[in-house]
Amino acid sequence: MNPDFVKLTGFQILVFLFFFILVMTSRNSRLHNSLAFEVSNPTEIFLNDLTELSEVTEILLNADLEFQGDEFVWAAQTLGWRRFRPGRYLLSGSYSYQGLLSKLARGLQDPVSVTILPGSDPGRLSLSLSRQLRADSLSFALVFSDDSSLVSELEMMPLELFSRMLPNTYEMFWTSAPEAVVRRLLSEFDRAVTYRFFDGQSDSPLSLSEVITLASIVEWEARFDHEKPRIAGLYLNRLERGMMLQADPTVAFALGERRRLLFEDYRIDHPFNTYRITGLPPAPITNPSLTSILAVLNPEEHSYLYMVATPEGTHRFSRTFEEHRIASDEWRRWLREQLRIRRERESRGEDPVVN
Image (cartoon, rainbow, N blue to C red; front, side, top):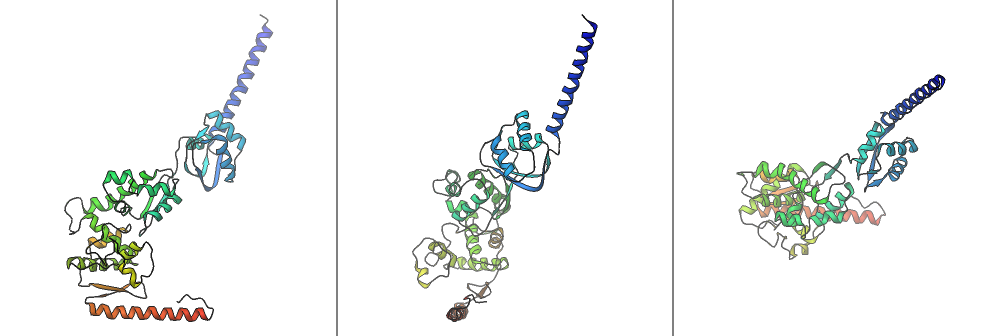
């Protein structure tokens, strides 16, 4: 064999190896460069379903993120990431292509903060959850329905299950299934209330269900937390004396709307109307906050039996019906005066809102 040919072939091989190593090194550097994909402002990305590479690329481009689309596609194809799992992903800082693509492809989503408000109802809560998570409101509403498998499993009334959706802010995955969300909230309730106060001997004369039912009335009645123990004590005084609770929130619940009650509203024939039944209603009327539950468990000790609203949004408490009658007359006079002022302002074409 010609020595010059051997030398030439060897040189070509060395050149080939040099450029091959150079290309591979460059390629590997581009794939694993920690600054390949930079996000200056935290950006949320939502993937509703299993998503193809082309669609993910378009979503990222539409989010006004600065990166090279062609290189991103090349990197994904090279690394073998072609389909990406549903979820909510919070992008912030710098990523290598491998780091970003594997995050999306493996479904390593970031949790969302889900807020449960007190004093709600199944419909409003279902709508609120659908706005914070992927599932629609109907899917959540079905969990609180008579046909719910969870309701059947727990042997609870739908309202009883709903009342244990403890108000707070929770970290959850955006793709969480509705039943899984409700189970999570129920476990939080058990941790904060059931196991804390009812796992063994409770000092309350009421059962857990009765505590939550009364707490739901207190929740609806009280605008300010500092009044809740006093209101709870008043209702407990009535229960101990065998008096009707006569709680306006139960009438509003029976009517299905929150508004100022009329005289005829109190006559509504409904199992939750505590102006017509003795004792607690058959189930909670809303989901009480922990402060309302604690108020029932630790009520203020007093001899009040009556209360009426005040212009400040609090209540005026009375021990006798005669005291209550006087306080109620004063409240009605105030309401009539506000109505008179409002009508005068409207007649003058002014803002009818009274300060």
